[in-house]
Length: 305
Image 1 (tube, rainbow, N blue to C red):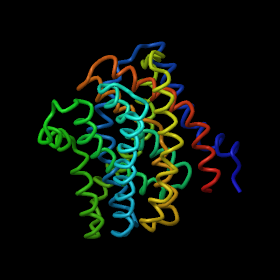
Image 2 (tube, rainbow, N blue to C red):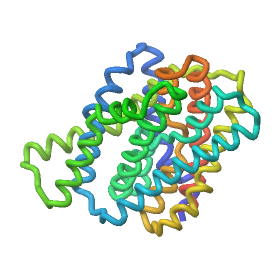
Image 3 (cartoon, helix red, strand yellow):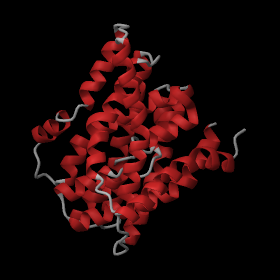
């Protein structure tokens, strides 16, 4: 059976070595992360999703189960976050960013490579389905929550449809369902772009963490949000995946993805639609939850594997 230290060394450590190298590079050269981030969003990730779904052996039933798990854990964590924030007496403005920080999980630039290392190609394919659903959730509910009602649902949907990811999902399922093989040059180009996505994701994560200031003015609420994201989420996810009858690699991936630290996109949404203090709160949650996830995810993987 895999031990905690073997998993931390073989699965978690490679990810943080890449992230650490990106942090070091950014501190030395002060690289603008936006161009690479845009490449990830508009080029690498869509082809990763397209390639992964087109070649996937997932059945329609399992895809639905994973999508249900992603939506279910997001909704349940949002409800739990709102309940806890109200119970501890957070002010109205802080409630919104607290809920955002416990709901949005880093299922993309952390979750996909982690599941790839842990469970191989099967894990990566299932992790991408989970990721796509959480992206849709963050671009609708996340935008609405971060803006505290200043952005309409129509605009949130328009923001989601302005990126190529949804179209890559549709194209991938069409190719898979119709058993269509792409011409060799197109297939190889798609595969090359897909392979570039994981190192690019981890590099962007390193750049973002390098610039994230740690604020302690709301340390109690920050630590509460971190605890809910890393410890409560898998507890909620466990009966949910059982209810959805997920098993095998699909069950493992759903539990791991549900337990990811807070997504960096939470800070982006808070900066764009809320204010500097709200962004600082979520950034603190991102930093601490990402650091502590080296332990929490190693424990979880040791139990699952």
